[in-house]
Length: 55
Image 1: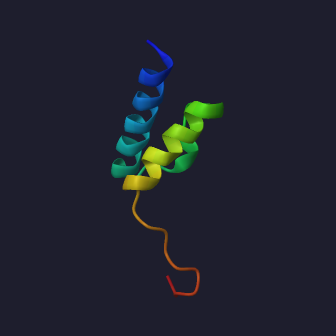
Image 2: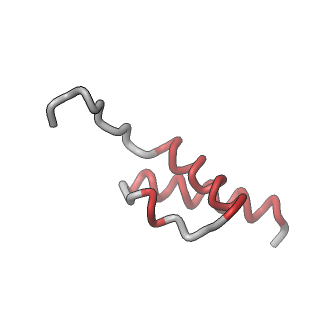
Image 3: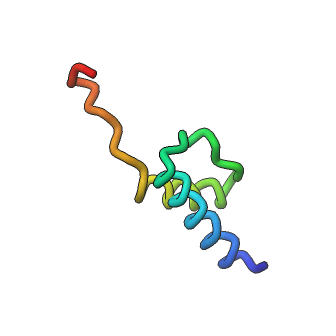
């Protein structure tokens, strides 16, 4: 698999983790692939609560 495919797969895997509600600490990558994974995760993960709001 080439670099472009690896990056695309990392983004898609991160997006899937975000949709499942997994914590971002489950990212299995380092370096550039970690950045790609987090980018995908951030697109689909539920928003974090506002720290000013009572939970």
